[in-house]
Image: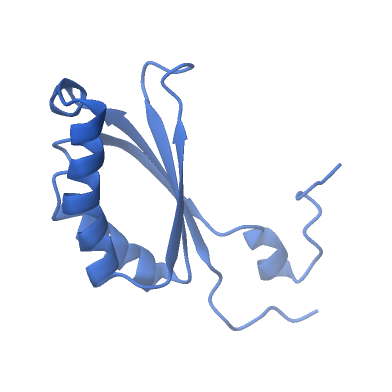
Length: 121
């Protein structure tokens, strides 16, 4: 079975840790900072992305949050990272601990087989 020629969507798991500066703010100040300094940069410079945000500080001392990004392609993901790096989010409010980037079921696209590793019960 031939593989598809289109580029697969990109999923990025952005593992971050809050900084003392972020934690020194009140919850209201954090919301204000995020909505006025981070969100406009993303919305103004990037199209074709979607995110979900997970709190993990209850279970991990190394990573406090995981931000999952789905981008339509690698270019959209690169624009996202460039936009984030121009805001206080990057290395001021959060330390970016790890970036895990991949394509869902990439092996299935490569080999033209069913995505058997994706399981729903």
